[in-house]
Figure 1 (cartoon, rainbow, N blue to C red):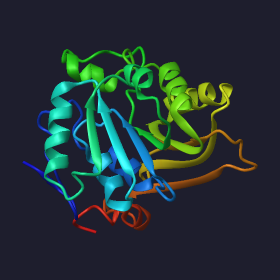
Figure 2: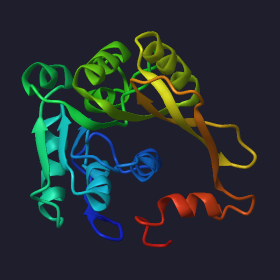
Figure 3: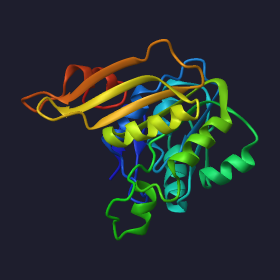
Figure 4: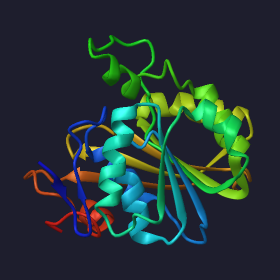
Length: 234
């Protein structure tokens, strides 16, 4: 069954990563102003690439190491009105870096972020969720190599893993300039953090926080405001 958004549909049955809140948060939050070229690392079903295509005319390259995911993404792209705007490639990020020869104004990734945790028996699920095939070092180094001078790199992590990633990025002079903290509801602690990284160290980091659900389990006003361009119900 396809997920229906306001301007496109997504099928994800063949993708290693299914459509989820993390992807929707990241795609909604990314600022595409003044972008001419975008790279999405680990596109999966292609939902983030399509979210970005909805709000920019920039050319988008969507890559994934999993062939089934890329086939799924290509189908979703071809069924959208942005089929000429998005290019899908079945390639690892490391190999893409070696062959690309270009820079991007915007890089986006909902990365494999679990490190040294119990693995799933499903091999492809591990590829999507664990960082054995895309380490923090490779992601940071690669992003820095192909990010334009004034470009931005956006990503999302579980809160604790995000602090580790941020420390590694900033030790390599890729600086956090903006964050968004996510609480699933008002009774639970922050469980996700979204980052914007750039080469120039900011005088002050822009920090915001939203709660997804209210005490009565309805969606919060700030979550609705963030995602209203995409969700049918908002």
